[in-house]
Length: 243
Length: 237
Image (tube, rainbow over all chains, first blue to last red; front, side, top):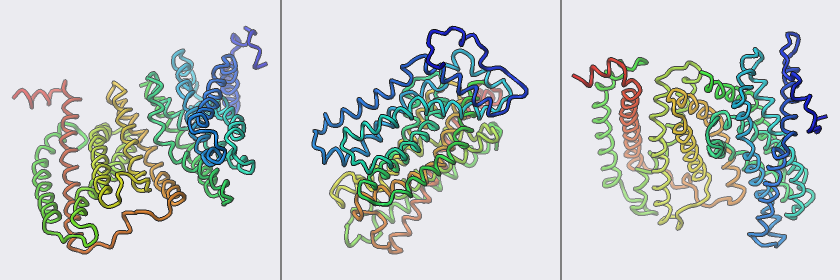
């Protein structure tokens, strides 16, 4: 149903119907459904970060030479840098289109908690950038000769890390709403350093057969604190545009 | 203090004292440190750059904490003046961080043999510099000053939450790659005649910060309230 690009009915249907009986979870579901439909209408939204990720990965063997020992020792850093840059690529579109066509105004006057709106937007951003990157990372790991034992820690660290990046990206997008896309990247990048350091540490530790669970726990803790804190600050940042 | 005219009158009284105190503390501290304090038996006279390097590094970090506190006040209580303080403190903190980085690398060349080492402290100071740059970049991109204050306040709160994590993660990362190279902390514990001038310098740097902050803040207040009556009264008469 999501992929029926030619069905005009879906656009005219009232996707956002205000209903007194609807709970917060219904509201979350409605926004997720609407945004997924919009994202799947334009394949570039989820294909661009994926292609960007794979192109960046391909550039490293071309620039550094194809020795497999060198590449496998650099693989954690290379995959993580490519993942961070690729997840920043789609950051600008998190709020800008809804802001431009006025649907963001409607969300804010709808009396539902705007926290949920931001959370749904973060989930959508993760679904269209983080998830494809997560899938493509195993491909990247193969072409960079990362040993098979390190696949699981890499996937786990990327799962936590890209989610945190989506949260940070939403804040950056909200703060630079209506401005250049590069601004949000510059705002977000310094704050993404702990994610990068710990994500690469997880994979490097697993390469050296060391215990990496501590880093994963801290990344999980950052995510757990980040979901309420960053979502609330993002709401605050969005409200700046409606004074 | 919250109202701009009151702040303006109050600050014009206190500013000369801040300036005089800063000059006294800095001149005594630097004279003592650079000329009288004993020469280090290992590093020779090179170590004397410490009397500029250490206070500016301390200031670079504590100004950020101060800014984040102002940011929190601005977001929670919408106190306008705290946004202005945040804005006025940012370039000062960035300059001190830059001074710490530059003097650190000048110090590193003769003692360590390189301008730069990927040591945990150096790296986290560099990241702090980037965060200052992000805050100032964000501020300058928004035309409406009150909105820009609030946006920077929000970002500085994130910075406050994330800076301890950055420090810890950089520590772990550094110990992973290069276990025990050079750290500033491993230098022999300082003798009192080296430590006392340093203390004076740190106080002097704090006073300089207070002085320049008041100066910046007065400019900011006048700039934002230029259409108000009390500003006209001051500048016309």
